[in-house]
Length: 80
Image (cartoon, rainbow, N blue to C red; front, side, top):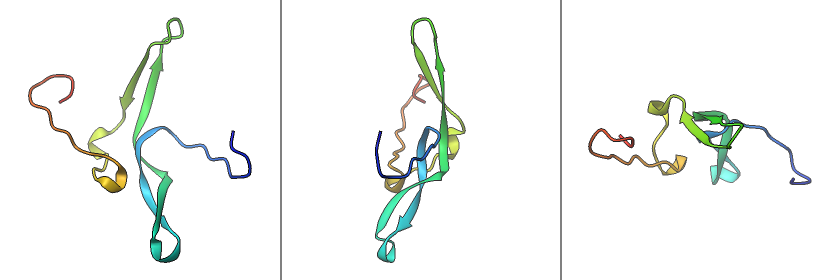
């Protein structure tokens, strides 16, 4: 546990909105109030197997400022 700083609780998400701070906005951090692609986790209590799902994936912003990249795959496989 970190000591000395504020503790923040935020949902797990694919990315967050950017928040500028500092002199003339030269510092950028994640704005934990603006989450995109909230992640849902399903856990088997017997074996520990986990499945992740992203809610609203079509509205996840794409770009380096969000640390996301659109990767297109041909076909109808699981990574479509």
